[in-house]
Length: 207
Image 1: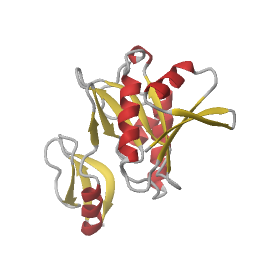
Image 2: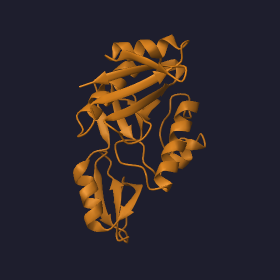
Image 3: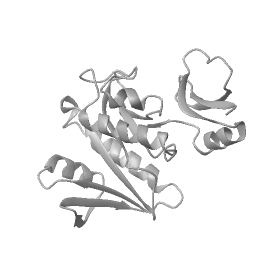
Image 4: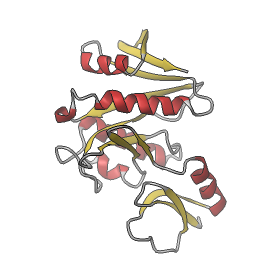
């Protein structure tokens, strides 16, 4: 390992020698390797953020995931002070996937940062890299941020980003029968019903 991937203050990835001191405002991502490998990864995904009208969807870094898993803020300003249970669970999955060498940039967890005040209002992300053309997505929103369309706005943006990636033709999402708010979010984001799976309602968005 000769180089590391770091994130600058504008949420852009950069490659630095492992021995170099981080510039002010930069953060280590947790990814490292030989220079060519790191630069190839950054070329494929130069930014960690996806902007919508009211939100910035910022990818959670492997280096942040262990703290979020424990319910800590990881230096982020969360509405309510700490991440919700769903976000903690997602961060745990990300941390485990990274430790096993299975995590791919772009296909993990994102925080939903409200642009007007910089508060994180929830989390959203993929259950892992796409397989057989499918990517599965889930989300968690703080109760005080619900009912304002944030989840619909973020889900639509992240799902359409996924569909623009090579080899992805379907984005899936599931929910329980009694979770009508989540069902409404999926429907407003353009998802349609598919056959139920293991007692869960399945929704899909396709190209």
